[in-house]
Image 1 (cartoon, rainbow, N blue to C red):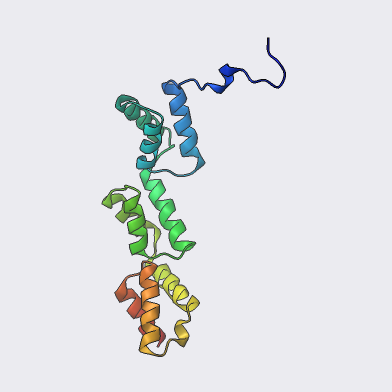
Image 2 (image 1 turned 90 degrees about the vertical axis):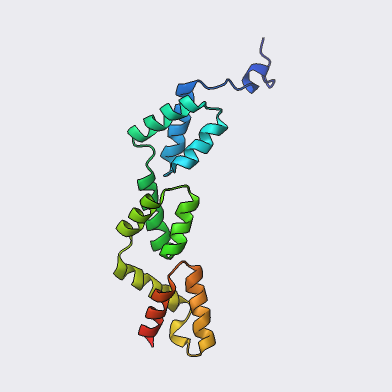
Length: 165
């Protein structure tokens, strides 16, 4: 007999998931936003997947279009460049931290950042910090450090600052 307001002990216990349940959970995890293979693997480990289950699961996720490192890298590059105003170096480091291969990273950066747009974004970043007011060497050095922190290359920064002068 079940009393109102009293929970049954059976409802508090979680049943272990079978392979299909784990696979569904990983599909949901990947459908929420783009994920790297590394992120999916960490999630699978947390679900106590065996190595054989992991191999089957990642193959299924990639075949079904749920997980794709190239697509993740392209979305990361586009978002961090256009929205956050990051340069190539900072984006590259972020993607390396995500566990992507150098080939995937290189292709994503080359295919998703146009050189003219890159210079325009750097100019925008520098102007937001007052590049037109930077007359002294100290002020220019401060701008250079800021742009370097944003991941832009030193030579490109100098070129952009010299073009403004």
